[in-house]
Length: 164
Image (cartoon, rainbow, N blue to C red):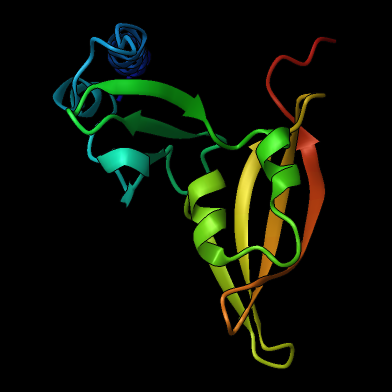
C-alpha cells in the first residue's frame, strides 16, 4: 500500500472515530433510549441489574482500552446517566473486603485475569490513565471466595498529551 493508501486509510479511521464520538455526544439523560445507547456504543460486554428495575450496561473500550463506559438505564429504558468507570475515585473504592460483583459494578470487567494458585488469588488487570497522564496497570487481587484481597497500581509510561 502506498502513502496515499495509508493516508486514505487513516482518514477513513478518523472519520469513523468522529462519527462514533458524535453519536456518543448526542446521548442525553432522560431522552435517549437503550436503543440510542447501543447505536452509539455498540453491544455491551455486560448487563447488570440496577435499582428500581433499571439496568447498568457496561462498555469496555477494547482489551487495553483506558475507558469503560457505564450506561445506567431506568426501568422504562431511558438513559439516566453515562459515566466513565475507570477513574481514580472508583479505583479508590475498590478496597479489600468488597466482592467481585461490586468491582464489576464499579469498574467493569478486567481485560486480563491471571491465576496465582500459590496465593489462592486471581489478578484482575485493568489499563487506565492517572490524573497526571501516565498509563497505569491496575490490578485487583480477588480470592477464591470472590472477595478483594488487595489492589496495586504501577505506572507504565507517559500517555497522551505529553508536551516536549
